[in-house]
Length: 241
Ligand code: ATP
Image 1 (cartoon, rainbow, N blue to C red):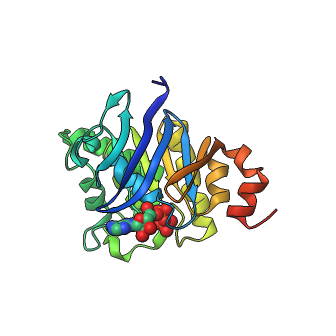
Image 2: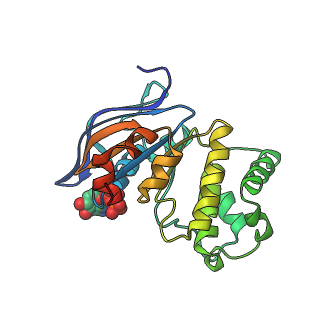
Image 3: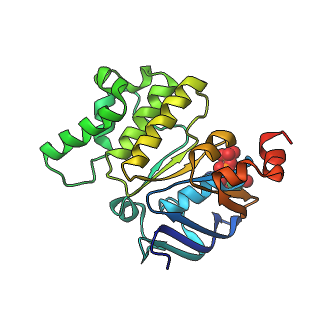
């Protein structure tokens, strides 16, 4: 077991009923790093995040988190262990305020009011816009603000690993830059992050290491900069040579 691995998968298989999507995935997500998972549409990236957060069951292989066998743990157990999933599409409670959405992130934790306040302050420190709009209904936020709120809600769950599915989907380059800066600063404070991102340049630029998935299998892994310079990756995912 690698000491530095927060998540270690070997031969992981999963899918939906009869339909197998993941075929023997090996992956190490290292503590304190940003790991990117890239690949074409339908490759199985979201499915892998769902398995990691316990939303769908494994059909084979091993899953260790912090050196503990967590295969078969429920979503609630994995959340309690700090495996936190910010889903694609953000899934906020539209009629509720930003602050109430953030508090929902902490609902399963038994924490004091004072600690909740400190957690909220930390989220507002990362995303000052959310503090300005704390009483506004989530449905009235821009796409970028909704993504900030979804990540903030994830942070309220005290993650050991923050998994973000499609950080930049539908957002302007300026907003993506702000979100990337926020992730870099969270990571600089020690947060481990697993990022699924369709903007491959952004993903490979921000990450320490990356995995490339194709048809439910990991087909390449390496450091972000190394993959960004790789002509095969550039041709397949960046449309340039
Ligand atoms: P995208 O970038 O398009 O979201 P992805 O890499 O995240 O793609 P997944 O969403 O994991 O890919 O989908 C992988 C495969 O699993 C696809 O063939 C998809 O049709 C199938 N799939 C996804 N969700 C379900 C589901 N709830 N039931 C059945 N099949 C599903």
